[in-house]
Image (tube, rainbow, N blue to C red; front, side, top):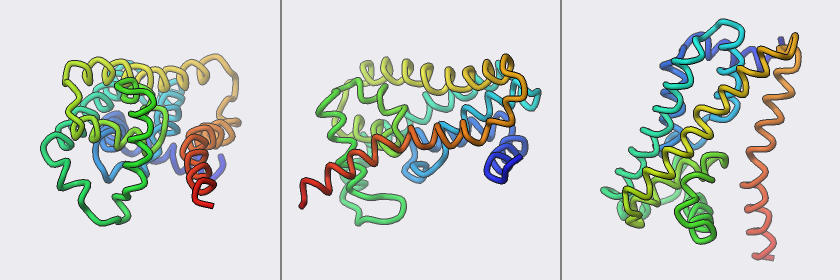
Length: 201
């Protein structure tokens, strides 16, 4: 097994269902979670369930709950502490460019950003916080939050589980699959960054 995939697999085996759900919770709603590997973690955990490392039903339920609760906490933080959060100076855990990027998605997609952001690293961390800051009605937020948690937090582990169950020796291809997920995940932020640089020039 290659080093990168072994490292992630070893981590999943060490932390179990609760640990995976905790990472998903942190990435979904806490400012410190924007750099966490949510997509690849969910897929690999689902694959691990197909190999017997984790029980699939508790895993899917825990990831769904972690994703939904994470966004809800992010919304509450934004509603309660928004002005203080966004008046901070740039740091490793907080950068105003992340906020601007997320605001563009809200301008373009409105409340649907809560759902769409699930599949975009960095944006998914800041979207629920900005929803709270902007005063999005909580009933609207909850609707898109639950749909997004199902589509991302539950379906990606199930995809990993399904592929791990039906494709023989898929572990031989796990590293390319994980790298592919990472590449696809970072395309939208890189595209936005490139457009931002082009407008400056």
